[in-house]
Length: 632
Image 1 (cartoon, helix red, strand yellow):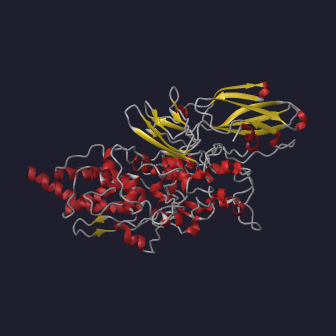
Image 2 (cartoon, one colour; image 1 turned 180 degrees about the vertical axis):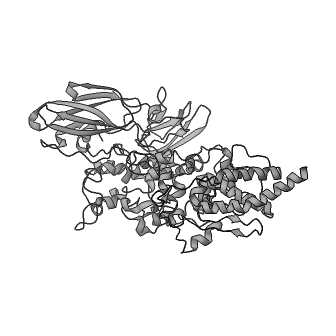
Image 3 (tube, helix red, strand yellow; image 1 turned 135 degrees about the horizontal axis):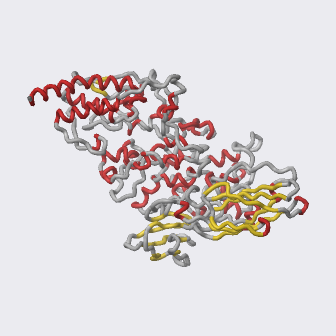
């Protein structure tokens, strides 16, 4: 798309997701279309110059002045206004400003938040009370999933040192751009681009156009079940629903003006790039990007690229080499649409959680028992959603990502397809959540209809429920919440309690739904549960408890009695300690650790936590008394 086309498409903000806002109301003089803006629509590069020109085509030809201000995105630099505001120049942000922190090796993932996106506002005034207002989106770089298969025409930025291009497809004239800016490559032909860094580590980039990549994922023997399930996914059907039902029915589902500002996330490809994506193919066919055409009336070649299908997440061209395929599990793949605050803040909220850093210790990726709850691949293997493919120790930590909790292919979810296809504003937290089988410890209460445990909790339970056969309990929040997991020290029989919060609508997310402020969507992915969460149900503040302190005193006494080595700066379950549940003292320790392993024990189920400690305390106290007497 060239700069002239930008004049026609400006106002729908096709290149900027965070700028996807309702346009301002027209002035009494005219509509804002009278203020024409000539601005770049394709990304202009990091730390790169840009220029914008404007002209007024109505308002009686009055010249007036234009005032500019930045209303969203990372700060632009060196802004300069000339010709009464009818010309604006400046430079985009640097990569370090747009994406602070260390860069991953290989293709750098870039989201709307980190790709140097910005939105400027132009306000024209003739000095006589007449005004025109427009918003102008800019971006430094295309969005990038961080995967090594990419689209032609989409510039990729590389993390690492000493990159050089070894080979490219026959006839390619693409060159590797090197520092002082970040190393980057713009693939110009379909095929493989082989690169290597200063240490000789190779990276193979596979490039193609979206519209030339075969959509045969569901062919016999491959991904038939996934393809069939994805056909009804809300992600796959989002564009069809947005364009509205067949002629004669009610209007477009998402309101007037759709899909202009949403095409970057509701169709395949990057608006503004010659990548064979939806907007480019629409332009080649003479279909306006903000067209009112209904889904059924679109040419097949456009319907093929509409919605969030396989290529929108996995990328065009062939699948990457096996060693690189785990990259699709990273949150960066989802971030290309869901990391666009303040409208979509799902990923930015998640990044502040412990889940985002769950696998930062190498042991969590190499130890199968740890990987089950500390890595995305380990979790998916444990619940049977993916073949077991352990992450190598040297792999970059990615945390527990979106793919762990959300079944993007729309099968094995906590809600039936009919519920998943409700409009986004009513779908609620059930949309696309996985529904793994209940852990052994909780299977009975989950299956009991009288407990009424919300199905949306099912995805949380596997990692927050101890394995009853493990040497030590770990992550016991779900067990305490439902009053399960304890052992009677004397008999060894299960020590059960009331599930005081089992009926909470939404399950875990009934309380764990807080996050960063100022986000229209996705703040709940911060999973915080501040004290104010309790007030709708508890008119009076909950009485303070010393459950954790009491449990730690008992644990210290148990350690002294048994001579166990103390655990330094790590949860007990990560140590080499063992408790013998064949003895009353070992079962008492198990009960104490259940409370210690749940940092929110007092909020989840204080009566049950107190019962566990009350059962363990006399057993540990008697053992301490015997040891003390023997030492005298």
